Image (cartoon, rainbow, N blue to C red; front, side):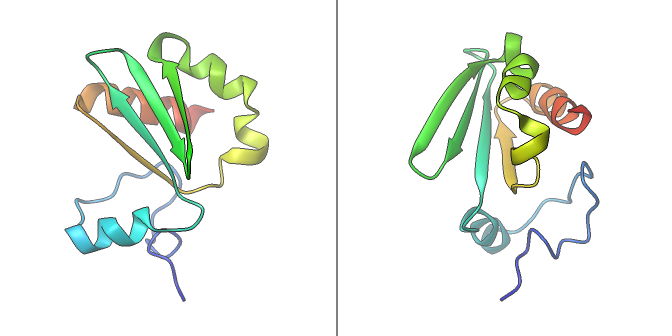
Length: 99
């Protein structure tokens, strides 16, 4: 079976066009999927992977990525990035791409 994540035709860091509900469901069901929710009201990013959830203050998000060894072991995992503030999501996306 093919995956909408790997078959998207997007290069790393490239933003996708809005997807329909079924495409989003397929991406979220990917067995290696993680999600990163940006909550601007509380200035926290919530990273979820299966049953594990970790809250990270946005003020030290980059440092926490580096502590986790983002580049070596985690950057090839598909991730759904979303939030309640478009600019905060975009800034977080830029950090992920840079790291």
